[in-house]
Image 1 (cartoon, rainbow, N blue to C red):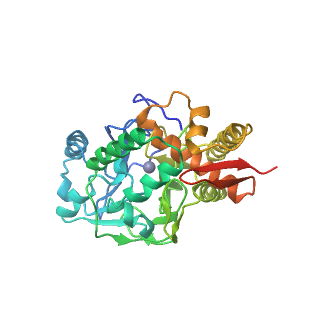
Image 2: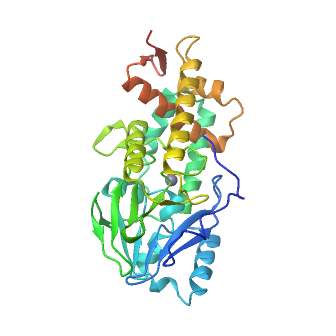
Image 3: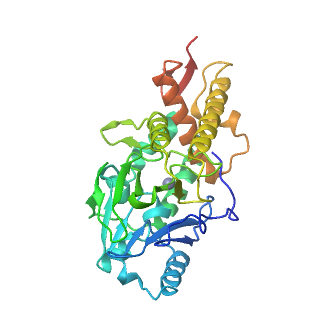
Length: 331
Ligand SMILES: [Zn+2]
């Protein structure tokens, strides 16, 4: 659960194909600015949109105007995933006549269909006190005001090729950070726009979510993410264009660093259970003793994600109490 400040250098400049224009937009989130990518040529395409804030919309309009373009010229919006900083402004483009494309597993989040009842119960089982839960839900409701729901979109699947004047755009399903996260390979450039899949020096958080294929269970984000990393390494692209921070040329090096950080965090979670069974809230208190409210949800997602993965690997098990769930190491 780490991220950089707002001075994080974005992916621009050398190595970025000339028809791919990175546009850096401000966000109100701790991660800092988001980079969206304008694909110049027919049809004029935007990959991700930035959040639904006045600042982001004005910055996006300014960047388009610098190229003598306006928002109504964008014919197609491709979404890497349904997090607010990536799709918040998408509905504006729908109203201006653009089509939206996203993976079908993002449907619920594109509708802002967060299940607050389920989340409330999960946070309760995790042992978060009522006051903290209330504050957390209030902050998530505030967060939901930085995106407008998208109800109609073209579902795109792994392997699908989207035509573009500058070269075909191939869709790659890269689940992990979200269940329906996709990357867009710019075929002629050996380059992939990867959203939040790999960020320089940062382990992308997987926000806790239901498994789209089995909605009664949480999505096994860490296992899916590990497979996505392996796939990216096999593809050996020349460069990744991420949504936050610098361009990534050393894919194998980043993947190795990410795996190492995740292994360390997993070891932290296991160590927090050494003294006996603990709830998610107790593990958070041990690993992130000074966590702020804003980050509690990310800490919750991260710890819960690691516990789910350790459970899948047979290393921990749940001990269900009346209104609490604790986790214990299996020796
Ligand atoms: Zn994201």
